[in-house]
Length: 392
Image (cartoon, rainbow, N blue to C red; front, side):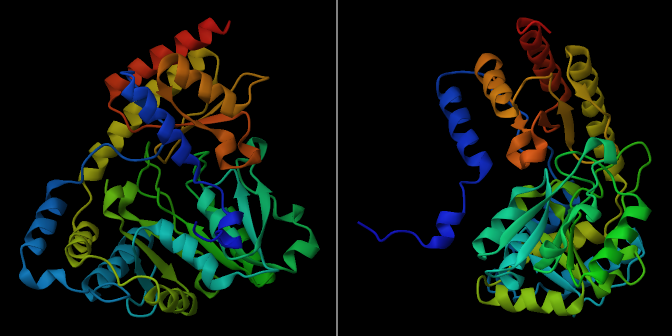
């Protein structure tokens, strides 16, 4: 028998989507047609110029060794140029840019770099589970900041007790938001930077959905707030922006001291990313992004199909301006896990229960727009029939 896992492992729960994937696999093995709208994995491929860059690099015999710990210079420079062009933010590619093996590992590892027993992470609820998981793995505690519909899905910093702030070290924020799809205002970003400075917090801003936006909306970077780099870092990812989720390309940018600290931790954990992937990512960030307009138009079509169908079925869903998600309020009396489980078993449509993202997500479900329009229309028909069977 192996020894018992560490206390760290006892603090970590299984990742929420792992159990759901097992049940989906069982249903598929039984021959059920499952429409997956739960996990946010884009179904569209990257544009050809990215694939061609990857292939060219992979054919180079010199491209298969270690590529360095911080990311190849060409990619870090491409990130800096991208941030200047896209957000108006100037970055030093040698000190203020770190390439990650997907932003998820960077988010988790940032907690290991900055938190320990006795510390607190300020985490939005509902929110991405990795903000919590990283803190728990580090032995720290979590204080959840509820996001409420009536506040536009922004936290109320005045609700955080003084004794919590005395122990808090990291403030996690994520806009455009997963799972609610809420978008930030300039006033809120300024408020968040000022709050982090006032309370000596590291503001960790997760921004992977900035370039999946609709109806003319352009999401900002928190680093565009004057003085933000004094207190903030930002995570960006090519997973959603460039349809490259499986490629695992992310980056941390911003405060040079924090970037250097995470780089030192990661140099003891991993040996950097595969060079051909990095070279393709550099091409992705420096190429024109006209192709995104049609990709985002496709997401907008999917959004409209699903939002209209959900509202017609008796659920309440607002039309998001960004992200690949629709956040839908359930009828009164339903717990989100019960609704999602019954929907899956009865119809084969898999959605993510809101409580998967924290207690404040109870009463909602998250739907990912990661299926073509015909499949979404079929999912909508099944959801409407399910609602009718429940009596509306």
